[in-house]
Amino acid sequence: MHFDMLPLIVKLAGFLLAILPLMIDNLRTGRATNGNNLILLLGGLAMLVLDRAVGWSDRSLLASGGWIIAGGAVLLVVHRMIGVPSGVAKTLIALLPWFAMGSYLVVVTAGLLITALIGFVTRRDAPVVPPLMVAGVFILAV
Image (tube, rainbow, N blue to C red; front, side):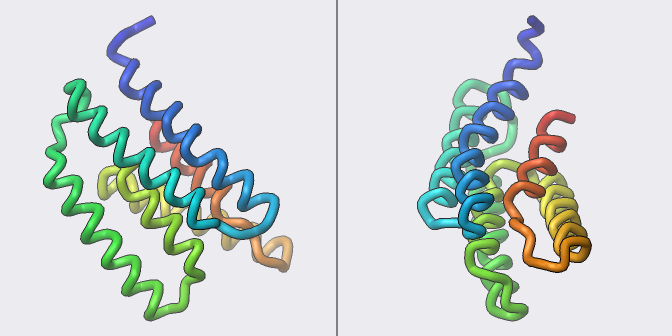
């Protein structure tokens, strides 16, 4: 096993473990609950600290914190302006610690486009978490 791949494997495994309860709940009930969003958010924050503590990442925690706070503020404003369901907004905020800005925008754009396509084809509301998870796994694996 190549040890240079270890940070990527750990981050991908952590992401899957953190988002799995949210995805299962979203598929079963069609909602994204606060508790499962909190698990995803805390898992992302723990992964940020682990990356920095072990030396896998050179991103500073201050810059990451600024990104998370600014991104959360923007998402809350967008939530109020266009009426995004609150569970979706909380899930998008919970994804902030997992990705850098460019990767985050790709994950959210791809996930929401896939959700819209599924909703258009099936003519009913589509769960948003599975497409976001697929896009996130793809970005983390690449």
